[in-house]
Length: 135
Image 1: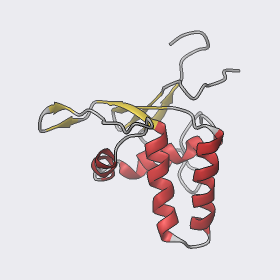
Image 2: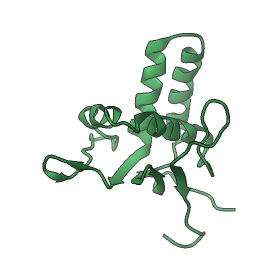
Image 3: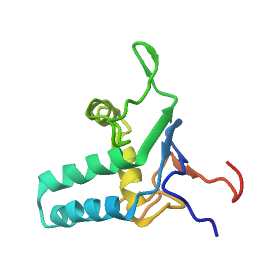
């Protein structure tokens, strides 16, 4: 069994774009879970807050995106989370729902596959895990 550190970066391919995500700390999981609990009671603001937190806390790099200047680069805040402007950019992509679902599933640890709300594996999404001892 492989254990993942919060400093590890797990590659997840979504429709040909590589996102590198890190596992969440227990403090991050607690914060995210509180918003998700409020969302399950119909609080739409908390639902969106949970999505944004999941993206900010887990995304560490991306490869395969272009912008008007060439390769798209993420910008980060002092706390290591991606910036609000990056969140805006990522949420405007056609694959943003798949990305949101992927990041949210890191709440339960590093998943083997990404499932939709009905438990069906999301098409075009794959978790690329390396074998223990290799990076």
